[in-house]
Image (cartoon, rainbow, N blue to C red; front, side, top):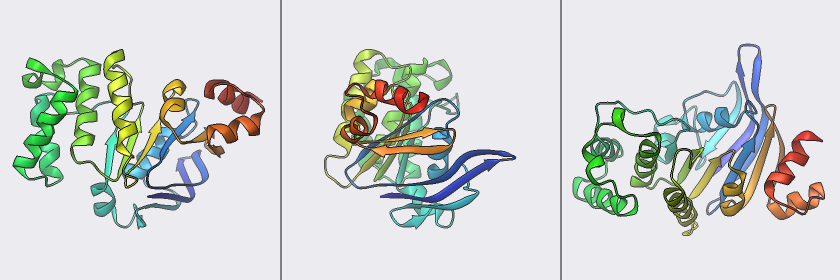
Length: 240
């Protein structure tokens, strides 16, 4: 589904990502973890086509994101770390805009929007404007928009920030279900390691722009000698 081949990203003299290589298979949920400034969000944004790699190659379904961006953007769903939507759109106007952008037929689109409203009930908020929404409500709409077109690869940057506990649990279950057909994949970038531990099959650990681990939880425990939580393992990896 996704391949990184010796990818570098520089911003002036700063190397944000260095020689990054990894892959994600169909049916996998992979957690991308690391401290602030470790290169996680830069990595996500390169996949989404918002940043161009300085060197190396990124392939989504065997298509190069730098060469065939029209194809790769069409098969990616993206939930950014900061929901950014034109403030004068209502939530449902935003969902319809996304549906039209991904060429989902009107009847099918409305049926899917109705289904998503059953998952995240909005009530009268559906007719309100984005500029008046809380951080959590904006996040729910970003999740719904990504799920609306059910893209093969789902990119999530801090999935539950701002969500109430019930909505956070709902989102976690949705992401887990997303890959059960073994035709879809999810890459989650998060500091909430308890969530990553709960749903991810494998973990990419970045430190100062370098990938220092690419392992399952069991492998990480063997590698570090820490028979504890992902958080304990992470602290061992990044402070030793």
